[in-house]
Length: 282
Image (cartoon, one colour):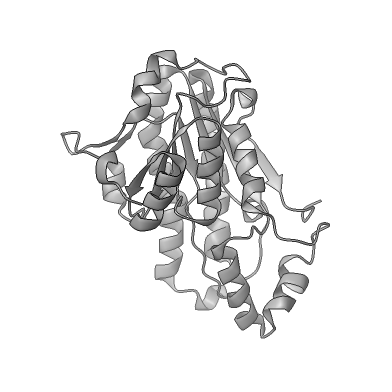
């Protein structure tokens, strides 16, 4: 994520993410907004936006007219996606929580998407890996929401969209850190919905099953090693065993749901978890 122009110093130890979307501030609809207005004039921040699901979400929001800040630690990847969607990039390390504590985010839409995975039995789970996952996938979203809410409250409008997982609602063996982080994100999202509602801010989780992304492809290889089976068997017998629809979800399918949650049509959708899992939890 290339922060170049996106993150100038704002004094007093603060960092302010602002930019091209500000000029349209006076024209922003308060509360819901017309269903056909799209996201023109809205400024969106997508973490983990350099590839996979984050890139698809960035494209979907930009297609609706939003100015997208593509945030990632991969500066070149974020810059490439930002150039593609006509947005800007922000190189950020979500493990640097001290820097995140000083942020001021002037965005209308925040998508907490960045995530990592590690698979191991609890008794063998590396504590450093556990902490890393919790930091990136729970503490960092908290700090970004904290940084975004004052601006959203000030304009009586905001959308917080947290990319959770089926593992935010269900558990799987060998994924203690990931499941714990996603369950925590669900709770954080609901508290944000309760506090944000009176200020025109909605907060929701999107709960995909297995999406065709590099993260999932890595999980396939990890599961194959853990279970001592082939990658084809992992897909058919482990990951998709409970699915009614036996295929991976495409990133664009999740991105379409995110774009709807960001829209004026979703003004009354808050505090909820939107499952897209091919029938796994049916």
